[in-house]
Length: 554
Image (tube, rainbow, N blue to C red):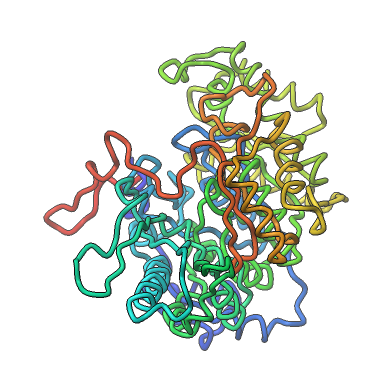
């Protein structure tokens, strides 16, 4: 049975009951139909200000294959498993982007019997948060060009702000605007990012409340004048209108798993081109309501977990009590050199080589960040006993616990072992630390991540990147954390270098200041902030039948 059929056949509770079960009172709930709601986090946090926050569990993974490792499925299964053993658990996840839904990766609501619902609505327009972010981003673009049209009082010499769209469209990466030929319309080069890479999305997820959101929007640097001075959104008097567009979106969304565990889904930046974490507001709210909050950071731990820890935890003064590193045996074989077409066949040699990838992630999480880690194997029916034994033996030698998880097929029953081990792991002492300090220079921060987390031998910078670093540091932004945009498929910036056994260099091509989000982006390799569709996109298979039922979303 397909994921969409499992979700559609599930018997959901009304969202008012889910809210009540989660400890949310009626006046804190704004319904969006029977099965979705916005919740008033401000009221919740005020009411529960004296309540101790629950444990925080981060779900991350090895470097994924193009279809992912099943982190969301694992996070949902773990939450349901914790509920199954009598613990009060809640999910805090990202919202799906339409780009992957209609592209190659598909939806982001889990799979099988470990899903959040209503699946189709969450994967499509949901409560309109990403559309609001897109509108805010593009209103700022319109205000910039309108200001230039009416005389350019601020003296724009260079516009750095891009438009955005929540779809994969490579044609929009670089465009020419203002070609109407009208008097005073200034033609210029522009471009689009996907909405989840917009600085508005990053701000949305890092803001602590509406006032902080407005402050950060005002600080966005949208361009420079002839003297190289920064022009901000505040100078355009744009922060008020943009915040108005986001006033409802900033409230977290409440839904449920197929087994009725509460789930807050809010914000959705990618981790390869942005910082890859749901909103701080959602995480904080869940931690006040539940004893165990399960959250996820996008792609592998070299991207999502590093940014979760070095950016989100630093900004929000958070730290995870335990980390789940998700892996599949077929992906480990893939990282060990097994061809995609043979990935289901037993290959102990390829698995042994691919375990190198897992071990690097574990070393980073355990020894570089000082965290408690467990490996969760997202089990497939093609996994053999010999392969499971080889992996288990390797992890045992390292003193790392492993759990075989079958929540995709069995729901909470398939994650009870992981849940029980997580409860114990959360009580173990840890020594959490960041990879770099605020006082490090921008280059030092990039190089500490590149060498310690990726395993790069050295870092090379383009001339343009070096000029931009010098400029940003002179502007007084050197203490900001770095957000490295890099391929998710490899520790290196080359997506084809899966094993990374030979010394490699990280190539930094561009540096972008995100003064509102309060981090500096380093673009590496051939990473694009506007993805393209594959040769056969998922959009070709998505349809609606005569009864109005959606088909083809997975």
